[in-house]
Length: 377
Image (tube, rainbow, N blue to C red):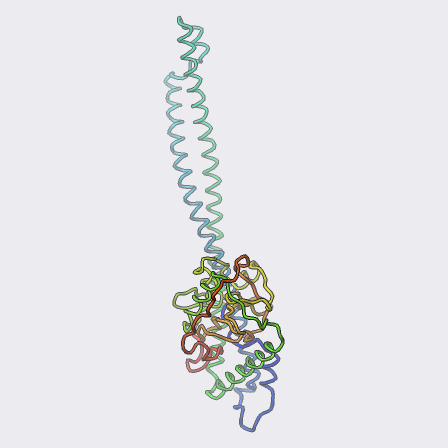
């Protein structure tokens, strides 16, 4: 879910660009015993590990949110059940006192036998039978209320235990992401300015080559498509976020990670979707790349750990990775897994006009390292 720190999209192309011989002195001396190509491979691996860890973190965060709501609901039900149980016990105590005081011991048929006025006794018997049923109902409510309260108390304790376990798991996953990004930070801090520039150049060259090959493959239709009205609203929201920083686990409004951007965009369009890129890929309807329309979600990597929103003309809006900002990128900036459509039942709108991009929407690499240095954790 975290951004795609590296244009992993074209591993082969990048590797070729990295390893291709160049003019003497074109490639800076590598740090330690590693070439710039190996350094880029290391960065790609570290960022991918960080992204997978943050995807796990986000999934746990969503599960923890559900468990907290469940625990709150159970606590409310338990409080109401205990209130009802208190009332039932009060009623049962009143019945016990009446029995003890002898006001409920004479059965209706005894009163009928002793009565001088049979009709009056019958009427009285009807009242007593109704009172007996009310007494029976009170006892039933007491027994049922005690069982309900006990069951709810057990469930509430279990929900709290699950919540505590998830919170501990989330902390470990957060530490794992921080650890991976710390490795990235240390690696980047060890490089010279020339090495960083060469890494960015190699990565950008790899992305450009992958994009050319992808567009030439005919995978995308040459016919432009219009989004649905919801897709138009979701895309407009994503475009308005361009320039905001990538922060793993963030869902706006000041910062986003990759699926934080896509999920919030569709939520603002009135069509809530799952929080994580993996859930988006697993639950939303698939759509062929040849049928992509603006607003569709493009998912990357075999593990579905990165997602972007299709803009049109072979471009996407995405929160790339730590150290980068929300921007417009080539669709082949990362290795494609497929695409999904949050609103498959909605028809394309008429009169569609693509959103106007802010200045600099396509500038600045997706590399996540540059003037700002290593990404903060």
